[in-house]
Length: 208
Picture 1 (cartoon, rainbow, N blue to C red):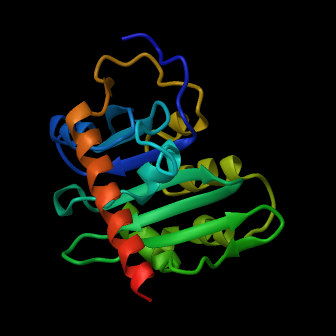
Picture 2 (picture 1 turned 135 degrees about the vertical axis):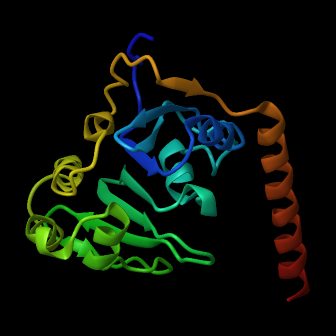
């Protein structure tokens, strides 16, 4: 296939069969390339979410989408609101995602409602031995540089594949790369559920 004209600055690395992961992508709201690479399956957002506002931001929707048990361990790397964001999904049932949020000039920041990531969480999911983690620890403590540069350095430091897919410049020519677009029925189902939730909240607020 030819290179994608553009992608968004984000990357999910999942464990699992590319066809099954492609079906999972189709049940969401964000179009994405599904690319088997180096023992992982990469999901690279190819456009904005097909859902109506405020659920139309492709990066935010993909970053916050729950990862099925069968696709973990999994990692997410995103640039959101000028921040570098890394999400670690460990194996196991009822495991809470861990978040690393970083700002240039400030370094790691805590965000209310998000469980903070320890270095060990990231190393465990990436399959990196603690003794090989000096560079990763240094990067996570740094406050210098730009979000995309930090993400690339972390991907390289963890010896993960597909770092080149992070930049938002398209998916390099690759026979196994498949563009998956959301199923219209699943988008309609999402909109219906969101609408029902809004109605319930509005009714509850009216009773207060």
